[in-house]
Length: 260
Image (cartoon, rainbow, N blue to C red; front, side, top):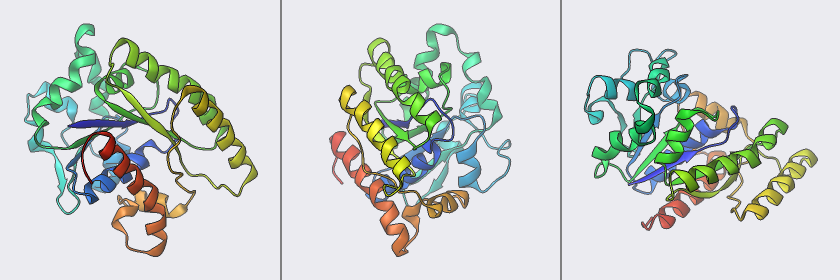
């Protein structure tokens, strides 16, 4: 079982949209995928469940405090082999329940029973650098850094790389940065091109691969707003926008030693 997270220490950087589309890209090639939403705001859960309030749904907090079987509280899209464990504001209290020495192993212990149930788990968490993000990175074996052409995002890129490297060094030697994923970019725009080149310089310095670019498109945003990935559409436009996610899905499957 492989555990993947999209992580950058800046909100509004496309990580939730990437998590959604990546899950369906992996499911499309026959991989069994579970998305665990850990963000107390529950943005991804609200999208996928088409609910404005997810407080009634069971979360990782409930699995832990009520000793629930995690498999019994999932929502399944059997067509695409994708399941969801929702999140809501109760997840904000999750980390506070665990003693300091156990925090980094909390998620690993809780998802261990799913070893034979899923090929991939995608963890969607808070963007800020806090205990929860450290737990998520300590649990994952792959991370993708989404990068939007914005100053505040660029300002966090180098520190995000350092954070991941620090977690790898001190807590999780199995953690690998799969690459930096350019998101919502328009290569024809001068500003976007300059941000890409600046990102490219950091990637080269750190020895990190740059992944296929996700073009700027309102279609991706509208699809996510309706709780769908671009993979689920069959239009000519969606096919082009879905291609980078499909390429990334094949890449990480091969990286993990599987076949697609």
